[in-house]
Length: 171
Image (tube, one colour):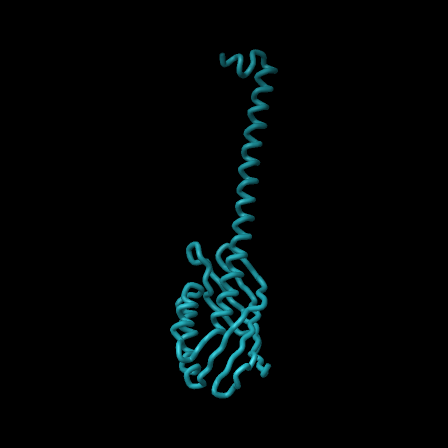
């Protein structure tokens, strides 16, 4: 029975061995192709998630009300690390002194880098605000650089820096 499967002559056995070898190579190639495709899908998914987190972070960072700072922290909590939330909380006394209120938007985000566990995104912000020293309808724009880190299966902002001074004007 085994002789029928692999052949009776040395030539038939060599053909069977060669066929088995080619089949094994094909299986390995298909597995590597599937692995590469999975990595590309994960990268595309990570890209979309990172850009989404950065967009939401930029919007929530520029949306605040001096009378309800807890609302901003609650909205930023799923997007940022505790260290970033502490940075935001440090601004609350200034918001209260100036009675500042703002509604933020993020017109554009630009992915700068994306690794397995780190990403950097440039965020363009635009907001409409008012304060004790700025009349209602004051419009501001800025560029924000967000550093994101993988936190388990999620991505969170673990640092940010304003790259441009916030510019303002009355619309």
